[in-house]
Image (cartoon, rainbow, N blue to C red):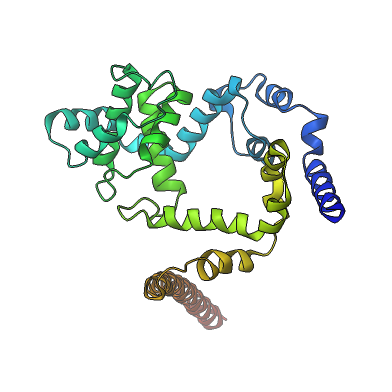
Length: 300
């Protein structure tokens, strides 16, 4: 037990050192200083902003910062289709949506303890329904998948705008997450769940020795920062704990390899094209120089 206490003390000290800057300068104060005199249009990507985002966005600034982040991720799509959300809502009203039944079922399972979603007649639920239907038309390959309701609901709570919540969903699903994350088989969610279990398994002995509820919550907040062996974590997730079917993993590897090979071939083709163009330009320039030299010699 003494050894465990020493290990935990060292891990707590490591955690405190990692967050020393945040303790010296309260997060809300650093955000206030960063945003002072800036409009949402003035925000731009920078190491300082990246560091602040990793520390979390205080409630006071969350709507403003999230709005900027969503618009930064979706700017090109919104410029091409400025009325996209309105058009999709009109399509939802005019045509039956294949995902509407599942969306309707999940509406009343969404953030049920939140006052904005607790009543069946809540305006927020109707907003959520419109956002999810619009997204199902926006991305028919996904349509609707469990988990999107919670993501869209959180976006509505923070952004306070249906349209911004819709574009937030687009940004997260289409621009940030892997392409196959949301599927009807929920395979990506299973992968994430396995990694979550593997994190606990990785530190199982230490976790089981902790008796105090407050202490275990403190430990769980930062123990992932002490895990550095990614290979072992993957092995625990997919080999040690009720492994995935080998055939499924092999198929996934083959598909990933094919994508990498296609990207590599495309890169090689671009390089070859670039070299060919450069060589042609050099040869053309050399011929021009030779002709100019011949003319000069004739004149002499």
